[in-house]
Length: 205
Image 1 (cartoon, rainbow, N blue to C red):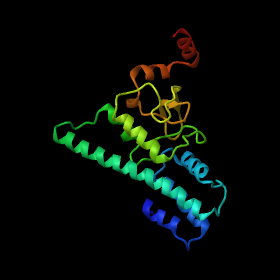
Image 2 (cartoon, rainbow, N blue to C red):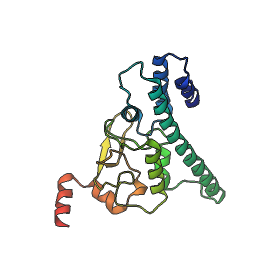
Image 3 (spheres, rainbow, N blue to C red):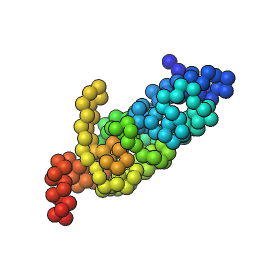
Image 4 (cartoon, rainbow, N blue to C red):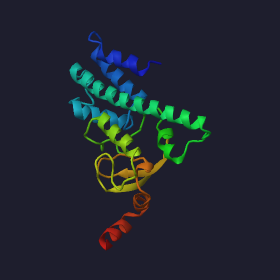
């Protein structure tokens, strides 16, 4: 099975068939797709002017999309390296079990769905690397009451069933499933409230 770098070389191959180069970019998303496969593809197509159904798109646009994906992957790999080094130090100090703070990282090992978008058509417009930097910075800071990506305060608790059951806070503005350690306990508790209760709470504030 071809790895990410091998697939990236195929995307950049000027002698390659355009349909194959597009296919290789889609395959890259099976190795690294911060928003999930469909949402990341939708994001890249929108930002780089690629028709999602075009089987022979402009090669310059394909390479531009790949550049954005690679930059985001570099941000994630650097974070994973720092995470691994921290865990080595903790294990050496006798802390064998990772804490609740690391739940987010365990669920997103490899970077796939690290900034999961529950609706494939709702995602941030900023470059992928910038979104990841904001999420990582938020995890290194005190918990907040707003989305660390778009600063929106509309946060809801959503639950998905299916092949990969999932539940957690989602920003209604940019669509990202947020890591719980980035949010205060009060924000998480409010996110769990039914919508009519939230309206009542806001009106009383």
